[in-house]
Image (cartoon, protein in one colour):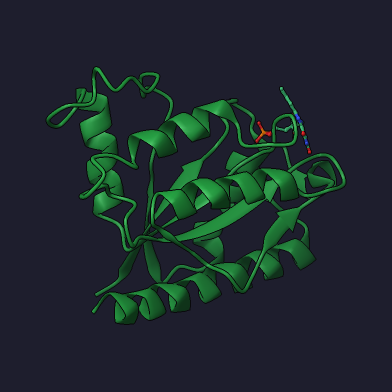
Length: 187
Ligand SMILES: Cc1cc2nc3c(=O)[nH]c(=O)nc-3n(C[C@H](O)[C@H](O)[C@H](O)COP(=O)(O)O)c2cc1C
């Protein structure tokens, strides 16, 4: 059976570079089923709303993650850290404590920026949050995309830089192996 990878984009911006990167993934590795999981309509986390299945948008969001074999987060960096909308989404997927959908879920991290440092600081914080939520972030490969303006085509809204496309393809193929390794850990 085909693996299913959920893709979460940490930017809500219509012309998001990170979304362009995310949209390129399926054409680089087509032996996987993908689901883009939206975080745009999630309410701000409030423990008072977090009982039973929670609000309907949260319930559907959690079910989407549950259906996947692993999630790849493609996110910008804001003020040297994790964008608030993404932190909010990850908080919603970290409860209920014992049955949360991120527990033991393989996760991959990708980030793109027009700047020079490739979202390193943001990825550190995302990794910290995913660690706290008991998911397994792929440890042996990193994907930082800097100077992204030179690497995408704004018409097709895809990643066009050949070297970066190769890195991205290799990252996703490694992530598929990571899913297998985590499945063995979980047995
Ligand atoms: C509030 C804010 C803070 C930002 N802080 C950083 C930062 O710390 N590091 C960085 O590389 N880029 C930073 N940027 C620039 C973003 O990388 C840039 O806006 C990028 O295009 C956002 O990703 P997106 O195109 O996927 O929406 C910041 C942008 C905003 C709006």
